[in-house]
Amino acid sequence: MYEGLEPAGSPSTLSLRLVPRVILGLALALSVGGCADWPRWSHLPETDPNAVDAPEDLGALIQRTWIPVPEQGDEPWDPTAVDGTEMDHTNALLVRATLDGIGWSDVAVPRRVVADPRCEVASAPRNPTSEGDWLADVDTWVLTAPADGGQLCARIELPSTDVGWDLMLAKLDDCGVPKDFEASGDTWLGYSQGGASGGWAHPLEADTSYAVFVAGYYPNDHARQVSYRLGLSLVGSSDATIGPCPALPPPEAP
Image (cartoon, rainbow, N blue to C red; front, top):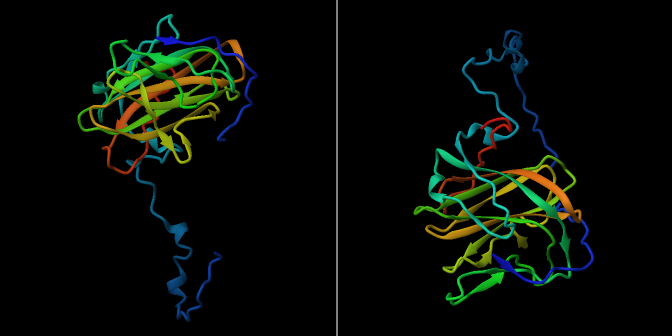
């Protein structure tokens, strides 16, 4: 659960984070017969009927069994635990959910994630900014990395392109509150994104708990309902080079 005053302030604006060749001349002695098969591309063999056409998204070639995750309840600030042990090289998690309102204030005081008061660290901010906070719904999905770690792939799809969204990852401490938000370059992973789809891949530490945060920061519209699909999957190992992430299944798939 979360605590804090109602944020106030002016809305932020959408910020989408968002040799010439030298050919050497060679003296070639070519017979007339030697040019008969030129150019080579016009004499390529027929397409292998067993070949797979290369898709625009290489993730479409990575097969996973998608396990549905129920949407969160009526409490917008309560994190939903998902079973990270279900993610392996055959299974992945598919979330279908809705953000009940979106928006951001640059001057709001970040709400805090509250843990068991008996914990040494009883609360922590739910976002890494020293100032500013989301004004509406924030969905939080908590998982524990398996014993061998891996690269967590997060892919999100939304029905429209005019929404600015955040898809962030935070490492949790033993009390279940955010300890470190994962970085990407000079900013936070998944911060200030936009468009109808996106995502990232990031290494996880073995047996460590993480929270995936989904929220909309633009436009400021408390009444807007924004549905989304979120896929969470594991590829490779923690120390491996990040490869393609599995593509989400078609929307009509179960």
